[in-house]
Length: 155
Image 1 (spheres, rainbow, N blue to C red):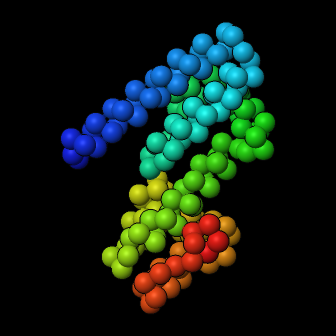
Image 2 (cartoon, rainbow, N blue to C red):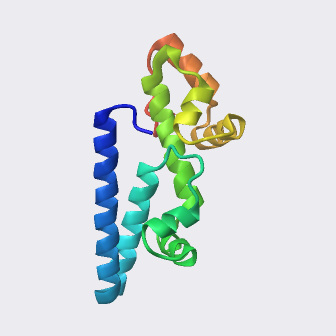
């Protein structure tokens, strides 16, 4: 729930943009299959990005938001050598790394994970370590000691 009028306005703008994308996707379905699939892919990515902090986001929600079936959504992501879950996981890991850098000394791993839509910080820490080669706790310790971190993309 938005806490400020600015946040509410931003959320409404995002919803309007998504509705516009959905309408464009439906129109593209009727005129150009390739363009339609790309439009669905872009709309799905945008939906995921704007709802990333929702730990209950499901593939069905994404498919419904972009007006396609789950199977179609899976196929479209596969055409880009991605999975829906993998894309969500990667975005959450990248956002977590960014928040870790921005969070400063007051940041806790659990708080940052929650802000990324993660309900199980322990499992997420393992994924973070696999992706970046360092645990979130170690990354936070490095930040606190040096007031800086390597680029989130390279950790």
